[in-house]
Image (cartoon, rainbow, N blue to C red; front, top):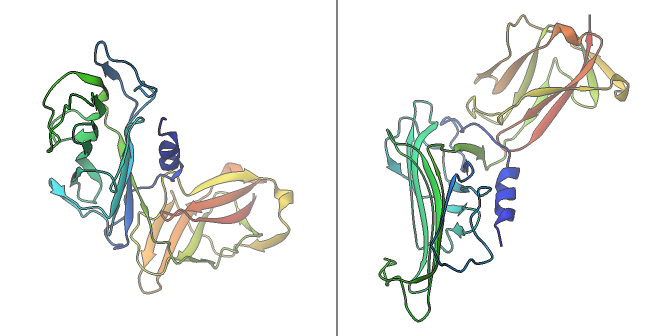
Length: 305
């Protein structure tokens, strides 16, 4: 069967920016590759139920005890666990016969290049590989391959090397020149407290002048760096004003040209200055913060002119 459950599970994990090195919490690095653009099938092979298609891609994740550091140059890491799929094969740390994970990062710890190779080899029976490569100065390659051997004519030796033909079936899928993306989630939940004054917590609605900057204050139980939000957050969405029952005025706003996040160590407090829009006057919005640990936190606002 296609490994749709794995792909769905990985896609269901909310995308996030790489966690800052200021946080030493364990992280899950998630890889999302692009669809295969080329397919290979050995001429004369009998097609099995599962074959690669252009809807398949390399996806996977690795669990590390701490985030990757900045300015890494081809550093190999040893994950606590991992799982990778090419849409046909799924290989985990429990059944892989060999695997390697090599990374290059920039000054902020973001992954810029990588080489991941995962193998599952049963001598004389099959050989499965999943890999994603984006080496410095080279075009990115994602790929997966499957070799099924004739039982009476083994095609891999004890080390997993291919030694003879014919194969019962050989196939592969590749994407050349279009590397995917790495994102990360903090696998240890933040100790969230807030929101603090001047913002009242849900289900209250905060009345504020449209266009003002609202200081949204909260704590995560320590300095977690500034990459604490999942990709695309914070975000606001319009809601019906008549859905709110409790009103609270925001008595303290700030001047702001754009939204900005800061952390004050002395108070152990984050402040997200939310720059609101003047066009929201007469409407209500719900501010949604989704953190790197996957948690949601919301605050409701009604905007006056």
